[in-house]
Amino acid sequence: MEEYGALMGSNKGRRRFLALGTGSVVGLLASCKKSALPPLLGAHRTRYGERSLYEKSARYFGESQTPATGSSRTPLQDLYGIITPSSLHFERHHAGVPQIDPADHKLMIHGLVDSPLIFTMNDIKSLPSSSHIYFIECAGNTASEQTGTPRSSPQKSHGLLSCSEWTGVPLSLLLKEAGLKPEATWILAEGADACRLARSIPLSKANDDVLVAYGQNGEALRPEQGYPLRLVVPGWEGNVNIKWVRRIHVLDQPAMTRDEAAYYTDLMPDGRARQFSFVMEAKSVITRPAGEQILPKPGSYEISGFAWSGRGRIDLVEVTTDGGQNWHQAELQEPRLSKALTRFRFPWVWEGKETIIASRCTDDTGYLQPTREEIVAVRGLKGTDHYNGIKYWKVYEDGKVTNA
Amino acid sequence: MRKGLLVRTTIVLTGAIVVSGLVFAVIAQSTYSPLRLGRAATVEEVKELNITVLPNGEGLPVGSGSVQRGREIYERSCAVCHGLQGKGNGEYPALVGGIGSLKSDKPVLTIGSYWPYATTVWDYTRRSMPYERPGTLSDDEVYAVTAYLLKLNNIVGETESLDQNSLPRVQMPNRNGFVQDPRPDIKAKR
Image (cartoon, rainbow over all chains, first blue to last red; front, side, top):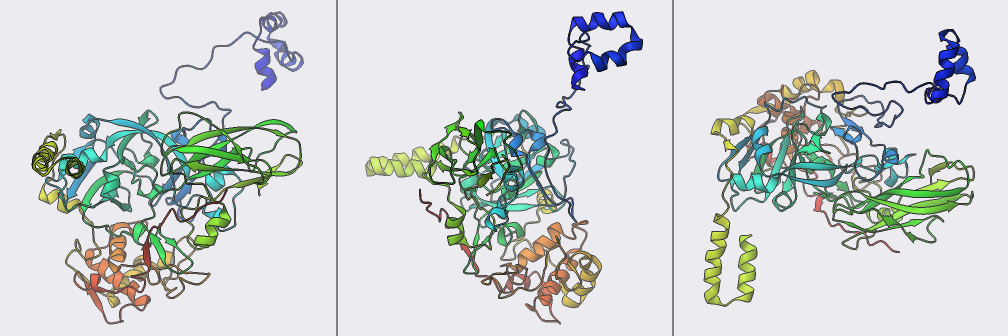
């Protein structure tokens, strides 16, 4: 394939091709490695673009008894910059992906409001919009790290994490339209999926930065990301970012749905569990070089990865290339946005020796990403959501990279 | 907005001006002019879509179901995934057992051992179960299945029935097992 392409690229090849005639094409292809045929016309225009057929990066998921539930993971090691392509955004569904005609979709706001309202998609798109880049991370991302069974690649260990530019209407605006009663303190958001996933969110957050989004990376949401309408709850666990959102119930208390009363809670060593542990704390991971990759030979490499915090902006990322004895400040790609992924880079000369590399980050509240040992000392091994420990990768002498 | 204005005004200005600050705050709030893009939801529309159930029982529909009836429905609609005894199967979670196990190294989190409210069981069953056909059980059937699940966990008796009044009064074993999120709880060392 490669040789054929090279042959097509030069006029010299064309002349030889013409002189030899069609009977010799096969022989020509086999023998004239570096000469070339004339450029051929490429493919025609298309209505909706596809990536190159040479690009194979994909989401990862295992087999399941219940394929409509569960998750798929973003190939973090293949990404550039901070935006996750919509088609590679991680998935977490509880009852499959509904196919919703936007002409039929409505959002109702009711409960402790002056006037219960129904918005069509056209209504919502007519309201003042805004766009923001935010990460979304599943509460259970990296849970296997906490339990001491680390996964073998950034995708498998950290891939319930993605970052998009979201466009929509501030939820606060819709709540204002309905008129909040003074006793309102919580909202319940509910999806139009088969299980009607529902989560309670404190009104203070709903009125702060929650977005009712219809746009993702410049186009409509993907069905698996909540088409035609979803909540984006910046910095908070993925589960509260209700997809296919159809109903907002303004309340004076949380509704205690399954996913807040029992699931997505964190069982501590004393047998009690933390409830409403929404925020995803500062975390970072090296995505290159990382597990399942190979350094072909000693030499210069760029260590690169992601850092993010549900509390705000990333102010510092440090990298170690000697198992944590020394930490060096990494370069942070601007813009560094609050509650978005931040790309970090650190130049490294690998001398071909076995070593351990890792990153740790600090956010603008001064919070430093802890080690696994520091987390386990406080939280034990039972509640595995919201784990954010430092991730170590081991580089072997033959260039193979695995879990440390 | 209103509170913030009031606080600032109170700190900076004298009592006489507080009054005018108050007036200003009220005006500031009332100056929001709705864009009026949504339309009013009718009482019927709200009723049709609103399936919220609160821990105090608010939102529960009138209805009832017995443990005995619940056993029939469970065996017909639930046991295929969760097992006849509710012990679960692979990705289908256990619904029964584990009471008293939360402090152990191998905690078993089930409705009986972990869930703090019986209303949550009712709400989740109506909202999301059975997995492949959610919303197909009648309200009475949901009361019955809930009663049976609580019986399997020895929280209610064999001969009991549950309705919109008795369900919220069921005391779940782990009712007081939850605390507020104390994070940031870890101070990492450099």
